[in-house]
Length: 235
Picture 1 (spheres, helix red, strand yellow):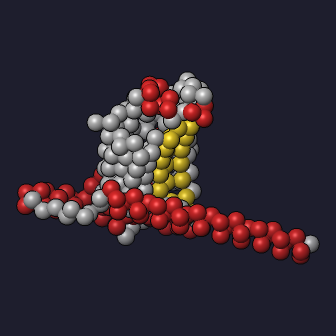
Picture 2 (picture 1 turned 180 degrees about the horizontal axis):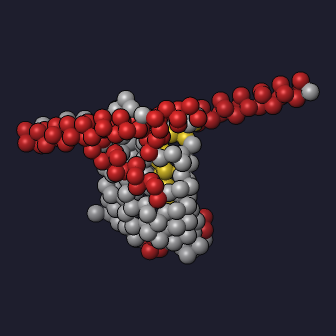
Picture 3 (picture 1 turned 45 degrees about the horizontal axis):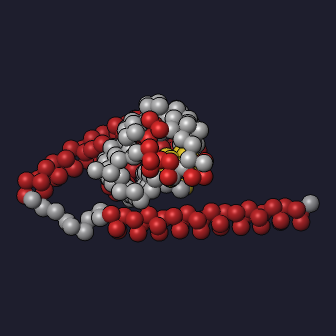
C-alpha cells in the first residue's frame, strides 16, 4: 500500500523549498495512494490539498487541518463523506467520480454541517447523482453551499429544496434500502461488471469535466467583458 511519507511530501513541496512546516499547498495527484493518512503529520498549515486520481477509499487524517480551504479528491474510491469535523475553514470540496451512493448519502451530507464556510461542492459522477432529487436534496441538507456541481444555487431553487426536504428524505430511505438489498444480492450471486467505474473511464470522465468547466469559465469571462464594454458604451 502506497502511503504519504515525509520524503514524498518534500518532493512535492519543491515550490516551497521543501519546507513542510510552512507548506500551504501540495499536489499529491496520481501517486497510487491508498490512504491519505499522515499528511497532517507533516504539514498542518495546508490550505489547498490535491489528491485526485488515486486509490483512496476513506476520508481520514484531517483533524489537524483546521486551515484547509480546498480539498480535491476527484477520481478516488471514497464511498462516504467523513472526517471533516475539524476542517472548519473548508470552502471547496471536489469529490467528482467517487462512490458515494444513496445508502450513505444522508450521513455524508450531514457531515458537511461541520463545514460552515463550504461554498462549493462537486459530486458529479457519484452513484447518488442518479437519483432525480439528488440536487434538490443536497441543497436542502447543505444550505451553506452556493455552487453545486459547477452550477450556482439560486434563491428559488433553495426555497423549493427546503419545502420538499421531508418528502425527499422519506424517498431516500426507500432508495437506500433497495440499494443495499440489490448490492447484497449481487454479492451473493457473484455478479460483477468489469467495465463499471474503472479507474481509466473515471479519469477520462474527470478530464472531460475539467475541460467543460474551463470552457464554461472562459465563456463567463467573455460575457462579463462584453457586459462591461456595453455598460461603458451606454454611459
